[in-house]
Image 1 (cartoon, rainbow, N blue to C red):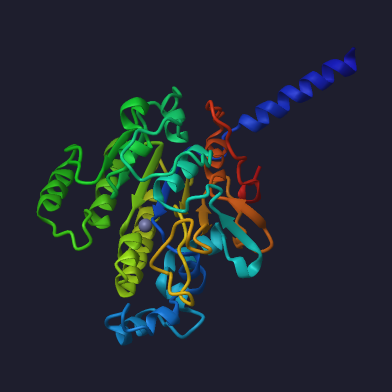
Image 2 (image 1 turned 120 degrees about the horizontal axis):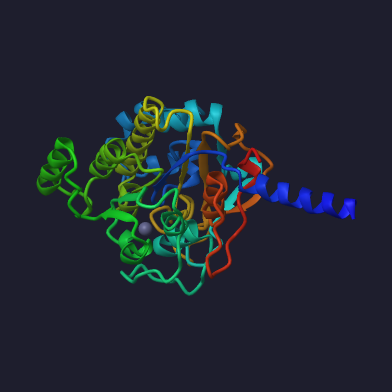
Length: 357
Ligand SMILES: [Zn+2]
């Protein structure tokens, strides 16, 4: 009987241990369609050297040290100086670290659905503006008393209110050309800028999405903030490799700016975990398919992820971590915050390989 009681107690303690939060806040950032090839290898000279795709090649080659192994560091200095030191980067396939879409479509809505719900549902097969019937981890968190009203998403792409199902979930989703909540004078200025700013690639500039999210973070202190950038994908589709690289570099600088800000605010300092990833991969330069993605493009399911902060093992550039799936990030977020995420659909398991517990 005593032994039985011990077993029951041990099980209860184990459950408590599982539910223990590893961090207090999460910031999730996605860089749409940014290839693992640029993240881990820097500038792809096969594309850079193609005049159809690259304007201003010489300056770009110098700026990002295209011919040297240091290229990735020049292209994405935050990932390679800060995250590689204190966090983890998964997805360098040359080192036996693979991350893939588990969904069979390899484009945006199915990818973001997989990322945010942990459920790579094959029936989610369109980018159309249809409200997601699945419950994202953001929605589940927003229903939790500790997070209610403290989950927000700022996105450049105007389909996010549908992916996150803003009306049902109650998550604040600001996307496309939505006005920013005029909470501060800075947000009012950002609204004026948004109304006037040119849209060279047909969407509001990622820079505005970022600064609005940053201002909102300071004004309202959400516990979970999602920022979804878009320009990398748009410039790749347009075949503008120079702009694709510059967008990736700018987004890395925004990550650095955000991380520094988080470390300066008592609500976030040392209590916030940053996760960075993408929705899908793209084709390769050899087959001249780097602009494209989708199920017909070989290797477009190959993605990557980076993470830093409490609860994350400082593995640096991971090697021999085997095969992981993009959809594992939803349960990873829930695990980090110590929340049970049990929607009606199945959920891929957390990325135990990056977690401290
Ligand atoms: Zn795309």
